[in-house]
Image 1 (spheres, helix red, strand yellow):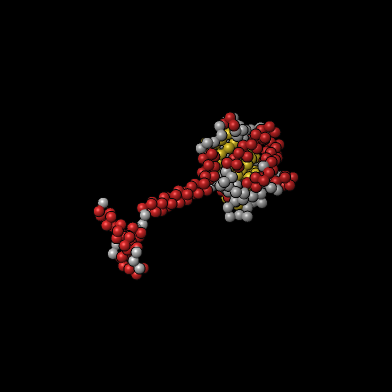
Image 2: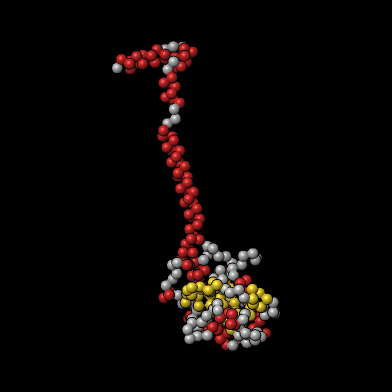
Length: 251
């Protein structure tokens, strides 16, 4: 107690001195200066907490930005709709577009892999295009148009699997179609029909990576076309975060 009183008395005497003398007195008591100049432990803790909070905030922003891409891939490749929800049959494992050279109707060579970059709705038939072929071409065009603003993400493709000439009368209806002639035997290694059916009886769906991933049933009617449209809409919706209209590098 005596030490406390002595200290209090010293500070009291210092307070009654003139300003110059007070400065000298403060210099004689370094403890007073030390109390005011030491950093507070709470400030260091708060700084560390702010740094951690900033890092977590940055990670949260990155996670939010990446979430749509991750979710679309997870939905498309992992949580695929059950077969009972699909009209089309999912192909597992998927088959990648082969390294083939096709030709345009005027004979120009085109790599079949150039079709990558867009969703494809594909039909296969001989060049003379019988009634079934014409029905498929009509359904392909109608299905694409029914997608509204998303239609530019889907190309409709007719792969001609023989050497027969395409009738001139079909030219007006094929203005928005992609028509390529491909060796039929080589094409069989990529697109396959359901058991008991022929390749030309189906419509096939190929994703933008060039993977054949769905086959619609043979003899598709108007009711089936409505179900096929729902399948296409689901596929386009699931891939909307990573797929855009048009092929990379092309306008």
